[in-house]
Image (cartoon, rainbow, N blue to C red; front, side):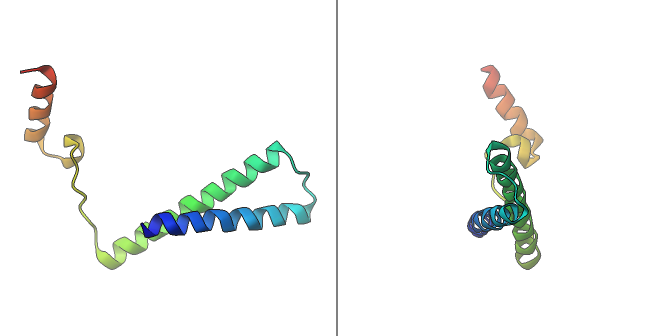
Amino acid sequence: MLNLILSTIAFFVAVFFLKRYLDDQGVNKGMTRTVLVFVLASAVSFGVAAVVDRVDEAIGGKKHVASADPLQGGDVGQLLKSLSAAQGR
């Protein structure tokens, strides 16, 4: 949850500063500038999310997430049961 909150805040802060920087540089407002701001702000947001994940992992250790998907669990027996069920056996 912290990841979502901080990356959202970082997105809007990046949008504000990018728009201000581009205004100072005299870049005309338009679709290209809007897309540029969006892409760069998204990159900042993804970067903040990655940093938050790394810090959270370093502080709390690696967390194991329960998954209903047998491919992510690494359990071959569960995978075979799922495949059998999908084939109708």
